[in-house]
Amino acid sequence: MTGSLIIAGLGPGSGVMVTPEVSDALAQASDVVGYIPYVTRVAERPGLTLHPSDNRVEIDRSRHALDMASHGRNVVVVSSGDPGVFAMASAVFEAVEAGPPEWRDLDIRVLPGITAMLAASARAGAPLGHDFCAINLSDNLKPWSVIEKRLRLAAEADFVMAFYNPRSRSRPDGFARTLDILKDACGDARPVIFARAVSTSEEEIRIVPLTECTPEMADMRTMVLVGSSTTRIIERDGLPIVYTPRSAKP
Ligand code: SAH
Image (tube, helix red, strand yellow):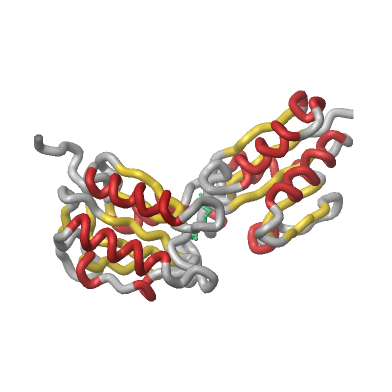
C-alpha cells in the first residue's frame, strides 16, 4: 500500500493562477487537507474527501495527513500562495522530523505556487527588481523583538521589504509600530504598495508614500511592499508604475 503526500500551493486566489501541476495533483487526490478557506477552493467530486480544519492546528493537521498517506491514501495538503512561504510545507516537515521513522520513507513532494508577494509585485510593476527581503509581521510564532530587529537591519541594508500578515484583529498594534520604525529608519517618501486580495473580485491596490501610510491601510488579506531608496514611480493616468531599477549605485 503506497500512499503519497503532496503539499501544494493554490496561488493567491484566482483559478488561472493555479499551476497545471497542482490541478493534476488535486485531480488524483483521495484526500485534501488544509485551512478551511483554502480547502473550500477545491472542487468536490466523487472519491475525494475534504478535510478542512482551523488555522491554529497546523501540526495536528500535518500528522493527520502523514498518517493517511502512510495508510495508502493520496493526500494533498493545500496552502494559499506557495506552500513553502509561511505555510504548511514547514509544518509537515516538522511533523516528519518529530514523527515515527517510517514517515521519512513516504513519497512526499512540494508543488510550488504563486506566492502573494509575487502576485502583488506584478500588479504594481516591478518593485522587486533589485534585492529584497520578505518578513512575516505576525508575532504568533516569534517575539516582537525579533521582528523589530529585522525591520531595522533591512532598512539599514536598503532592501525592498515585503510584509506578509501585516495586521490582524488580534494584533492591531504591530503594523503601527512597523510603520513608526520604518518612518524613523528610512526617513524619506519611498513608495509603499498595499495590495489587498490580489487576483480575487475584491482586489484593491494602493500606492502611498511611506510618510502618509496609516495602520488601517492594511489587513490580513493585504500584502505590503515597501520600496528601497532606489525604487521609482512612473506617474501616469490611474495607478502609477512602481519599479526598482536593476542596478544600485555605490
Ligand atoms: N503561503 C502564502 C502566505 C501565507 S501568510 C503565500 O505564499 O502567499 C498569509 C498572508 O499572505 C496574508 O496575511 C497576506 O499578507 C498574504 N496574502 C495571501 N493571499 C493574498 C492575496 N490574494 N492578496 C494579498 N495578500 C495575500
